[in-house]
Image (cartoon, rainbow, N blue to C red; front, side, top):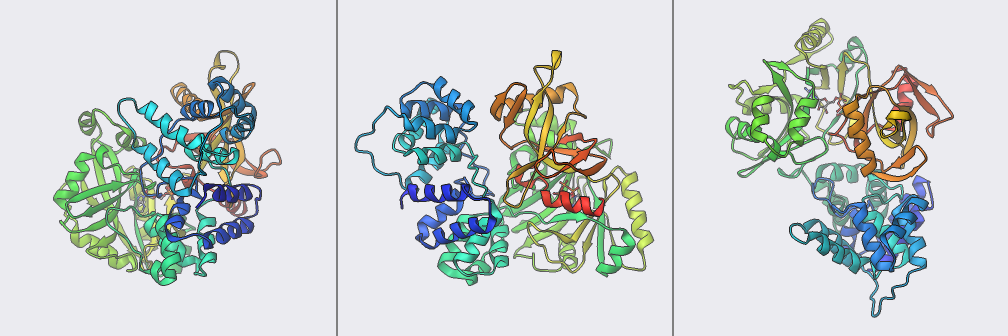
Length: 552
Ligand SMILES: Nc1ncnc2c1ncn2[C@@H]1O[C@H](COP(=O)(O)OP(=O)(O)OP(=O)(O)O)[C@@H](O)[C@H]1O
């Protein structure tokens, strides 16, 4: 299958902002593909060649791509940089540069989807000596054979910024439409496998029966079930009838998988962090059965037995060197709260049963391994739940979780079956799309950050400019990141790729025509850099609107 055909689909997708049209374009295209190609297109359509669960990445910086483009079209790297600055994006720069291409490729063959996919995967494998030259060689093989539009989308795929406004939701709907399958079935398969190549191929070959057979596999991470904000206790607990309430710990969510002799640990973003926390691997090896399982819990940092803010665990997870030293300085504790697999998948079991299984398999005889502190609630013992909340806060935790006893584990869902009840006011996790450099002696730093939220097309729409809450070290760190992610700079204004996630506190949501969402925040303050979240995990315009309507 020719890559140009996929590129034509990209162009049509970029040309419309309408979700239904995008879904139809992809759905029609998927119907024309054979099994091997649909597997690749399932990922390429999202601008990637790796499934969401994989920690592999293409790993090519913008500068290297610019160098390869320069060689492919026979110009200087400076000319490519200029074009990127003028056009605001490497893809559009390619269109301009390829029009003037002086290198003529003889005997060139049209690029195929297969060749592009395999070459992009090959890039991630190249390391060690002369790796830059070897990467350039692979890039050149692609770029010198590419048409202008192929180069546009190839370079955007390589820099992981496809910009066609297609996210998981649209691909899910397109697969459902193409093969006449219920969307909920496709969604479930995606949440369980986190791999659109498997979902697309299975949908094509086996339809809904095949998708329904896909299940959890220990070793492959699954999207975590997420929480909504809880209404008052005396409203929600009678509504649930039976609520499992447990302490909400302020650490990092950990999904621990044992498969055979191997233990792997993943974050909520499905990042594999096994190597950063060797003592936790040992803890699970010694205090959990040697059976296949997937359990979930929160890992927190402590000092003198008291919990430390979650950034302390984050430092442990990000650390590549001196792991031993960090282990002594930041002792960790695990609090388990769910089990999704034990010898067999358990996600369809009600939470109460899962909790019973969990309690029967964890050995909590050591200080570091714990079950979350729990109280089962009903309409008659609400004051005891209020006490659990107060106790949790006094112990230095964040609050409590309120979970429906009868609920299955629904991967990726933020629904009413799992709620959070916190002491602190709600914040929004927002994505930085730009910023403004300071003036005078602050001229070297980006002083305010344009923050945005994801809309239903997975495009980022601006909400506010935030400049408060940042100390000098954080400003320096963020400015460095902004420079790495720079798309263009005009005067004091910088535009960046949407990668940085900031947690923003604010006093109120207000209407504002100044920003793309039509809303803004009063007194926004940066509370944290959420290095544990990807832009796709950030909050949405929909959430902003629902908070605006409910005054939350
Ligand atoms: N006992 C518990 N049960 C479930 N989750 C818990 C528990 N203790 C702590 N957590 C954490 O609380 C998180 C949900 O709360 P919150 O919304 O505040 O976190 P967040 O990371 O800001 O957002 P998200 O809901 O997107 O994870 C869970 O993802 C989990 O990491």
